[in-house]
Amino acid sequence: MLVLSRKSRESVVVGQDDGIHRLLKVTVLDVQGENVKLGFEVDFGVAVHRWEAFQRICAGDGRHGAADVPAAPVL
Image (cartoon, rainbow, N blue to C red):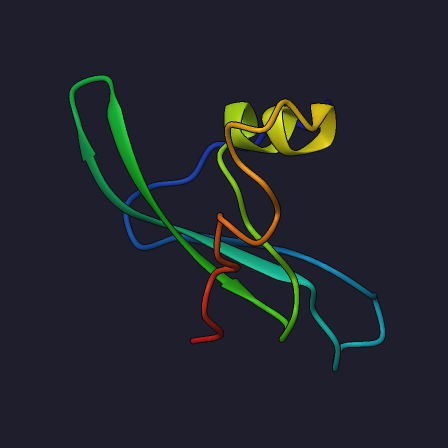
């Protein structure tokens, strides 16, 4: 696991190293105590889920299907 420290309004980008394409940009929007608000910018069609929702989708337990949890908008 890669662990990075970021301050408010700083970002991390995950993607190809060609300098043009990126899959995901995560920006720290706010930090209050133990709570951190994150902003996600993703390529079109890339879904972003909370980990527990993603696990339910993969398990197919019927509580949430892939169609029930919308993909994050491209910003």
